[in-house]
Image (cartoon, rainbow, N blue to C red):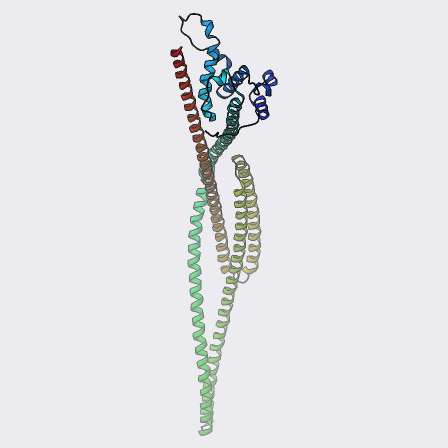
Length: 453
């Protein structure tokens, strides 16, 4: 039968058992001469006892405590055989694990060099394997402890984050009044915007009517000019053809002059109305241009707010632990206050500038400027409230996404830790079952030996 383990040299075996198994004076006195050329039975028995103590925690004293019947005569005769038999039974149970299946009593009482070298090399191979397995199990235990610590920290972070989410989701009573006021202000703003939009539609309709009237009057003026030119041509032809009395000519000339005066007066009135309508159209175009400028400014403000929101998202992504979340939440609240103050300052400056522009333009058209100013103020308030709502919704969505990521990572870590823990439990259960089987077999062998004796 071929060996399933390498046969080591005697020097390697002695060095290994000195360093790994024996301690103190036993390690110093254990030499190469104890194995070859004439192995010493006492040394080998003590070495086997130490190996069993290392592997199974089976102390040396336990080999001398084999139970005997109470009525046995001369029990001192059995004092020498009990430790040998106990050691033999234990080695018969242990050596198959080391792939040594033909251990006999002669290997204890009258050992041979080659046989002892093979047995010790098998035990050495098993102890190497056992050491590697123990290191791997220790690494798994450390990883499991680290995973359990991470899981505990993650659960604490999740609980803290859930508490913070509850705090953020629940509106405090101090802010409930502000929320109600904001809702009422929003409703008022909506009503005011509807009214102003209706007024703006009415003004646009009036402007369109005025434009149509101007076009009709221009058409009429063109037709009258054509009629006057035709009349002049006809008068010239008639003058060349007909010779009338001077009185009739004077009367006709006076009539013509009166008609020409009337036409001039109507033309002047039409021109005045045209000028007025053109002034009104220019004012409306100027108002539209100013509205476009204000819309551009509002778009710039929205772009700046988007940039600030992106920066906030980048800062939120960097947060991983609960303690850093608390600190960064405080920092973010301070930054929000600063941004609100900066926005308030900007809005104050813009309102002042708009007020100055309005003062300058009120000389031209007070009614239109008042309407536009009110519309701008209402629109600004509405956009501020909408921006606040957007910021709050974005923060809540980001926080929920982070919570989901943390939960997923914690679930993954817990699954990994549970899998490792299950593997360790299964291996330990198998190991305990093997030990129990070995102990049961050893006890059965001892009982057989007792019956034989």
